[in-house]
Length: 285
Image 1 (cartoon, rainbow, N blue to C red):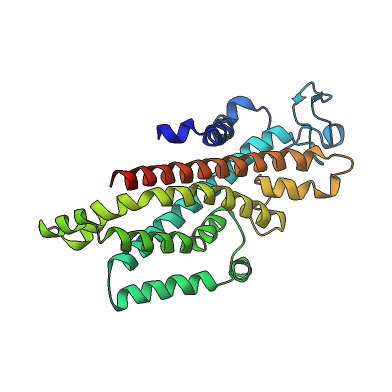
Image 2 (cartoon, rainbow, N blue to C red; image 1 turned 180 degrees about the vertical axis):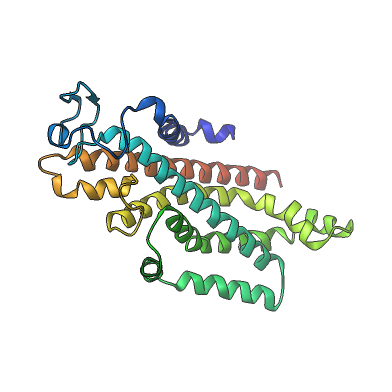
């Protein structure tokens, strides 16, 4: 962990994520006004950033086409986008570790069946699955989390499967088996914890990717539906006002980019820290 925070990229990425997450969590204290209901549409629409409206309210990032405060919607929308990113990745990691762990631990047809299931799920086109879900149910936050989680576990499963197969040949696993421990207990207690480091890396990168995918889905009307704010539908709502009111789409776009860059930097730092630990361990051996 100390090596991770000594890495400048990890420190910068972690700082970016911390600022955005703390701001989103503190939304009631750093914003004023209503997320969805404007004061006066005619008098407050398309106000420039750092301006006051006729009622004296200050708008840090201006207002949108119906007079809603962009900063307020940006912060509350960050709650939705971050929740989708973290919860969908948590679901992906849970499913991936379950399937990959069992596929790497078991032998014979159960392992072959789980591997075939992973390959089949990986071959399914995300867009087709999304269009099917959108046709069956109205897109909402829960559906987006479920969709991203159920279509993102396969890389985790393949990674965990390889790690478990490698770790299962180590002496500490043989020692646990010789002590009389049940096979699944050995997998849960001794093997999977040692396979978590690469999972953390793919999870850190996956959070940024999930938020980016959610933004793309919302941009095309297949994600979080208005009036609930998310960075994706905020960008979509400002796509036809880029000339006269660019701040409507630029503000969520900048925050989205900061989060994705932060997740990428943290993931790169984790990867380098893990590589350094493995190199040091190899030299000791």
